[in-house]
Length: 264
Image (cartoon, rainbow, N blue to C red; front, side, top):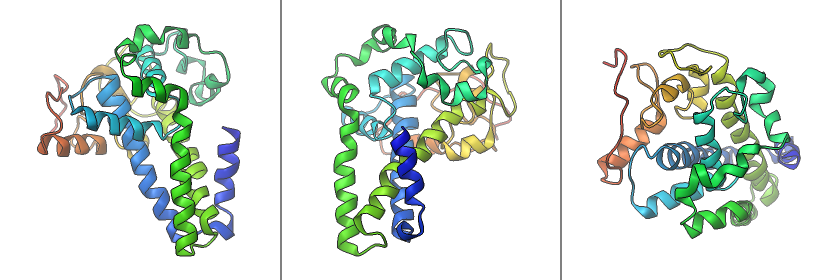
């Protein structure tokens, strides 16, 4: 994690700045965040809809590019969080403070790791998911090789190293903090549509950078809903992706919240 932050800051040095770097960051940011929000979160963790096996696996691989652990660990810890949200055994319990829920919890032993089979037992049968749980970091290698080759071939400022820094450490640094904001900021700032037994809030600015995950109070009220933004102004980019997949026939049995608020 320290290396990611050092590399991310280095990417912003003048010799590595380029429009090619910005484009690489934007495309890989979309791939990674959609992989997390649409793949790991709504599709796999909550089974908000059904998708073809090939699509689920593709989305899970995209989500694993976030380097936040493999799919079994990610899904298991997330399901554990929902069961014990903001209680003492919640690994990123927001009651312990903003810094703890944002990232400090990862610097300590996580007891929930010992219960992954209980919370994500349905994923252990898939050999790809088991492999990714051990070797997810290897996914960065072909991406790094591709970026380096493109940078060298196109003569981008900073060459291959410049694009590599923008596409790997800078992307991971941004995605880390954007994802962690759902654990911290949306348990501290915003408004509540529903009286849930936790500290979840709807936070518009987190929703923008996380493609809709910031409507966290809505999500905690209806965890299985494929749609998180329930008011007309609650923009949910991930939901728009699900709508597109449904139109293409690739998302079926889409689960929705049983209640909406002046949706229009």
